[in-house]
Length: 167
Image (tube, rainbow, N blue to C red; front, top):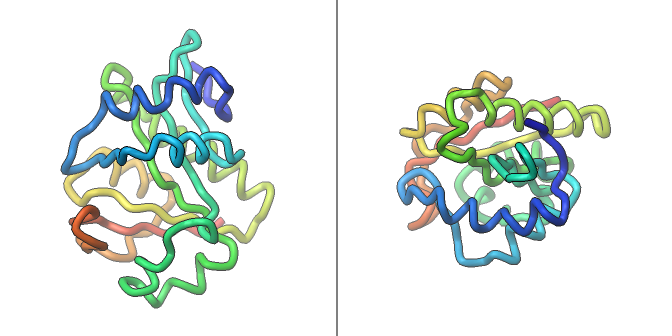
C-alpha cells in the first residue's frame, strides 16, 4: 500500500469509490464530480493505492478557496485563525475492506507533515459526524482539538463536530 498525491489514474477512480461508500448520515457525496476531481488535482490532496487500485483518499483544499461563509456565521471565533493560512481536510474515506488499519489516520498524518514542512504556521480544520466514531478518533489521534461539538451548518451538514489543528 502506498500513500501519495493523486495520479491521473487515481483521479479517474475517485468518484466511483466515493459513490460506493455513501452513508448518508456520515458521509455525503454531492453530484459535483468536477469539484472532487479538482480537489484531487490541487496538490494538497492524497490517496492510498494498492496494486494501482484506489483504496482511500483525503481531499483537501485551501480554506481561502472554500465556503467560509458557513463558518463565519457558525464559528466566528476561529475565522481569523484559518482564514489566512488554513487547509480544510474536506473529505476522507477508506474502502470497506481496508478499514480497521488506521488508514484514515495515515492519510491525515501524511498531509499534516507535508504541509507543515512547507508552511510551519498552517491551520488545519475538518468536520466529522458526531456518531462516526472511527473518523472522530482518527482526527483526535492525529493531534486535532475538538472545538465545536454537534453543530448544524445547514440542512445537509448536521450533527458535525469541528476540529482544529495548528502545525
